[in-house]
Image (cartoon, rainbow over all chains, first blue to last red):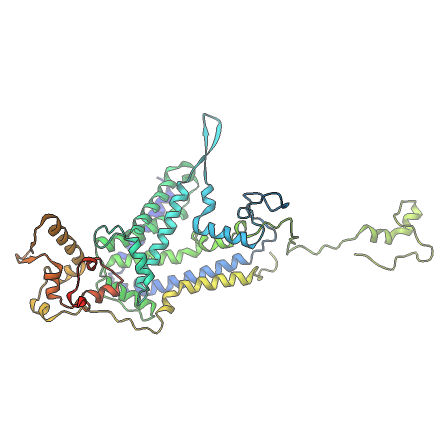
Length: 345
Length: 134
C-alpha cells in the first residue's frame, strides 16, 4: 500500500459520497447544483489568470530554450529551425507541435541497466501515445458537452458526434472518445504504480487528478449508457446555469450531481495544481524563446548599477603620484595641463 | 525580487488570457438574450387515447432507443415480428407502422427532444416519416 494513492483514492471516494448523500439533504440540490458550480468556475478563471500573471512577473533575462538541434550559424551549415529556433516563426511552429502533438514527450526514452552495469536508453513511445490519446479524448469529450450548454447546438458539434460515434455500436451510440479517455487514464495510472521509478516519484497530487478524471469519465459513462439520465432535464438544468437563471430540475438523479460535483472540484483544484500546465506550456521559457543568445545581447533586468572606475580614470587621478613614485604610466603628463579635463566613465 | 509588479511580455500574456477567458465563458455569451424553452413532446390524440405505450412512460423515455434496437435485430435477423409486452399485449415490431401510427407527428414528438439534446438517431437513414416525404 502506498499512502500517496490511497489518500487520493479515499479523497475521491469521500467526494463521491459527499455529493451522493449531500444532494439528498434539504437544500442539497441547490448547494451542489448551483452554488458549488458557479463558485468553482469563478475560482478556476480567477485562479488561472492570477497564476499566469504571477508567472509573467518572473523575469526571464536570458534565453534558455532547450536546444535539440544545430543553431543558426553560417549559411552553409544546415540549422534546425524548429528544434533550435532562431526567430518567432520557428518558435510558433515549435509551440504548435508541442501543444497539439506533445512533441517533446515523443523523445521519451527508457533508461535501464542491462547485463549488470551496462546502461541503455530504449525507444519508449507508450507514454507519448497514451498522453496524446488522453489529452485529445478529454478535449473531444469536453467539446461534445457543449451540446448541453448551447441552444441551438452548433452544426459542428453534430458532425463531431457523428465522427465520434461512427462505429454505431449499441444505442445510445457508443462514443469512442469516452472509451479512449477511460483507457488512457487507466494506462497513466497503471504506469505510475507499475514502474518502480515512476511510483517512487509519484505524489498524492499526481494520483488525485487521475482518480478525479477517472471518476468524471466513469459517472458520465454511467449516465449515458447505464442509468440513463433524463437528458432533457439535464440540459434544462445546465442551460439554466449558463443563462444565469439557475433552477433545479427534478429527477436528474444523484449520479448527475456527483458528475457535476467532480467537475466542479476539478475546476476549483485546477489553478493550484499540476494541471496548470494548460497555461504553463505557453509560459515555458524552454519552449517559447528563440535561441538568440549569441545574436542579441540580453541584459539582466535586475542588474545592480555597478559603479565602475576604469584604469584610464584611475591613472588620470593618480598620474602625478605614480610618476613621482616611479611607476609606469600609459600616458605621460602633459607639461601645461597636469590633469585630464575630461573624465571618462 | 525587485520590481515585483512588472509583467514581462505584457501584451502577449494579456492577449492570451483574454482569449482564454472568452473561450471558457463561451456558453455564457453564446446564449445571451436567447430563450431556450424546454421542449415537451406532443402526444397525438390517438396516443392520448391509448394511454400507455409499449412500456410505461418512464421506461419508454429512458430506454426507447434500446427497444427499437432490439426490435430491429429481432425482425431483421430472426424474422419475428410480434412483440409481447409484460402485460401480455402484442405489438407488431415496426417503427413506421406501430410507433408512427400513434406518434403521428415525428417533428413534434421525436424531433422535439432529439433536436434539443442534439441527438441525431440513424433511424431515419432508412425509415421515412410519410408526412415529411410528401
